[in-house]
Amino acid sequence: MLVENAPVVHWCVRNEFVKGAIELKGHNPTYLTAVHFDLKKINITTDINELVKQCDIVVLATPSIYLSDTLDQMNADVKGKIFISAIKGIVPKVNDVVANYLREQFGIGYKCQGVIAGPCHAEEVAMERLSYLTIATVEDQVADQLLKLFSSDFINVHCSKDVLGNEYSAILKNIYAIGAGIASGLGYGDNFIAVFVSNAIREMETYLEAIYEAPRDVNESAYLGDLLVTAYSLFSRNRNLGNLIGKGYTVKSALQSMNQIAEGYYACDSIYFTAKEKNVNAPIIESIYKILYDGKDAEKTFSKLVTKLN
Image (cartoon, rainbow, N blue to C red; front, side, top):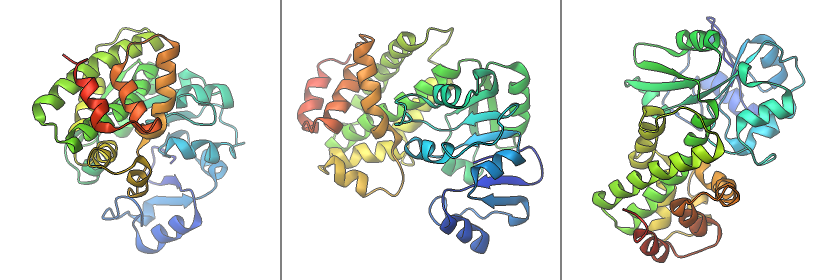
């Protein structure tokens, strides 16, 4: 998606069917179908280059597994453009986060980038419920611009300079949410899940420090708050994926039963091996990886994990 601070919003979708459906009915036929758009204020296209030419601020909200399919077609001049990632996953083509992918593949440096973090579910934003966004960018001028762009009567915006930390934490919380869902599906109660999440935020802090040391407090909303809402909310697709697995679905059947992408599944592989490479002690990530990718029994794996939590 690409947005500019003007009466008309330029929106890039991945196929002509979605474009035609929105233009005909005024709503997305696949996601948040109850939300109706003012078509006079939206210019929809399937051409990423047409979009980039029209706008100064680009908001990327495509699932990470499809991002390279879209951006690899981009040859428009990106000089002076600001790219904001709302993506919470690893780009499979380069096995890296979006910030590094943009910098290395397209020469879009961190000064022209931003990351949108939570805690914030799209479903509640669509219902105009009070929500909080964290926008991470290293440039104060960019931060001020984005603060004005994204703030509204029902959205409070906080700014951060921890671009990579916010991006990695948004990925990690999806993996931990799968674990919380597995625990719930297995029949573990609120007491255990509270301990699980408490351990998860400490594991996240260790992981982030190993990846990129920076002044940060993981108790802030962008880290802990985002983890909490993703681990507990019924809107959380990652939690729902885990819940299905905990109830006995195979990983494949659980994925097939969902009509949205659970980013945590696709990111877990990369995150796990990076933890091994960095010698990070991450028993929760390791346990979830074994269930998702090694076919380990969820109940037996969590019985072992219980002994490692405190």
